[in-house]
Image (cartoon, rainbow, N blue to C red; front, side, top):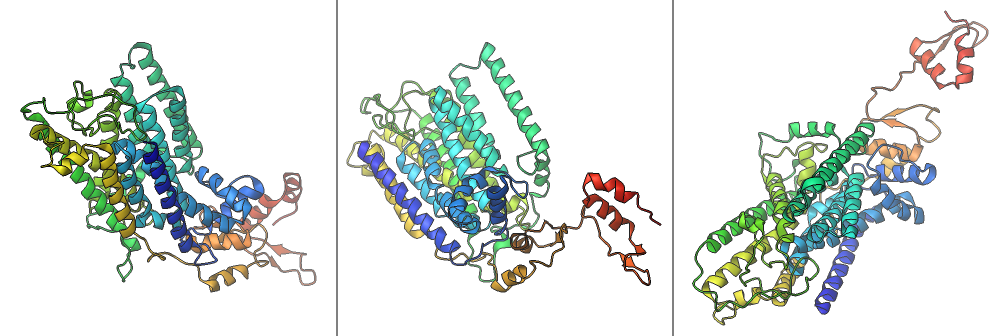
Length: 545
């Protein structure tokens, strides 16, 4: 098991390094930031390094993770390095969650490869860096939460709570994913262990109420930073009458952008996992001829990722968790503590449902700022986790077939025999993961990426010295708006709403330019607002007509 763990660690290190190199090759192809919001990140990092605060309200954790790299280099290079590093690092938490859900290291490797090599993940590294970092943090929080549900020690529970807070501060989508998957799983585990009784139930309800109140309060005070009730309105335009399998806002006439493939893969894996689960239930419901030939279940230390190397998944167990009795996602490798495994089905069903919902063609994906579009390009996350769940359900069905045919160790069924042994099973799945890594290479460039033209940079640089002090630049296009903000340092606005209009004054005295000046009322009000409080009253008392 030590050698197996070392091999997995080495494979993950190679996967992260390879993915980082691929992403850095994409980002370093241009000396300027890439993507619609490319200059948004350097502007935020410059403000954070110089003033200790963000220039525009946003979920803060991603920028604090990028800040050390920006301080070591510069805001543009630091943002690119951080985007490539944290995007590639999604392999690590994807492995952890996949191993927990899939019941072993092999399933974790499959999930890690699918998440890391997806086109959607590469696209987030270029276009929506904060979203990509948020998904990495979200999977890390899920990993900690599932580990705490499996064995709720104080250290693990504290780590899970810290992960939840980190996801909340990283991105709104990250917070939603963790809440939907992890919180019900934790409650189910506590209930299965018989800990939600009497005062403990009251403590839990009070803690949940206080947590919700605190989250809602922070969201009300900082709606642009944290997940809030107002974000529910984004679901209004989530369904479209026109079917789209891909994301039309990203599809060019060449048709080479494959963002929609992640959604289709996730949909297929989720449906396959459910089908395998139903097959397992049907097989398990039938009578077993004899259990004399089945190897006895034996206890052993639990391997990392939730697998139990000393337990044959084909062996019948005397006790099963309430989750199995209720017909939930089967556990291919029964845990030494069957009650502890009850969190798996509760965590699995939201993931399956999310993959199916994202993969349906009637998701509204034409608006780049809409919820449907963001969900579609993040489809690789539930797709990777559904692959791990599919591994578990297929192994569960195979174990059920083996038990009924008494052929787990029979030469007539070498495949079932190999799947029944953890080491061989993980080797097979590792080979599958390696094949996926070779086949699913995003390439050295990504069709659909938005680049910055050097002439546009020159034009923005020419604005220096021509923007009046205190003026707000109205730039309706986000890409140009943040670019201008970076090179001029002037405040910007996408729309003129809320920006006071300024009408130039008109001097009409025949001999003195300031003897008699005609000033429009909005301009006069604006001038007064710019003055310090000590001078405002004195100037406002000047004779005006």
